[in-house]
Structures are given as C-alpha cells and as structure tokens.
Image (cartoon, rainbow, N blue to C red; front, side):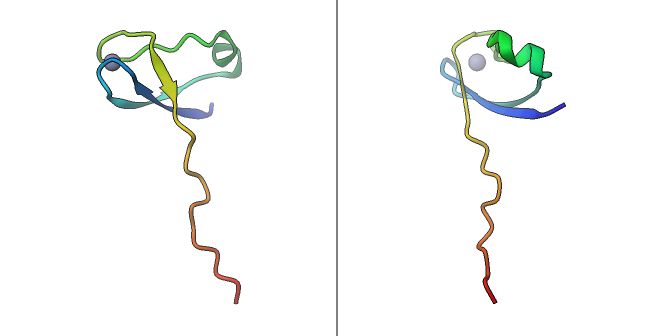
Length: 54
Ligand SMILES: [Zn+2]
C-alpha cells in the first residue's frame, strides 16, 4: 500500500497515511490528531538526490 503525506490545515501537523487505491479515490482523509477533514496532500519529495552525472 502506498503512503501519502498530508498536512492538516487546522492543526498544521504533517502526517502520513497508508491508503489503498480505493480509499484514495474516496478523497476523504482525516487528520489523526484533530480529526479534521481539511487536510492537504503533500507532494512527496521523492528523488531529491543530487544526481551526479559522472
Ligand atoms: Zn489536524
């Protein structure tokens, strides 16, 4: 299952959720801290390596 990073717009806490595709398509994510639905998905910073072309 892929993980998605979110940040809560209410308590401003970043959190990570394990979401299946079917869950993800429902687009209902909840902050685990304050249970707010006002969460924003973070763009995961994958491949932030400095690609050394040697
Ligand atoms: Zn929250």
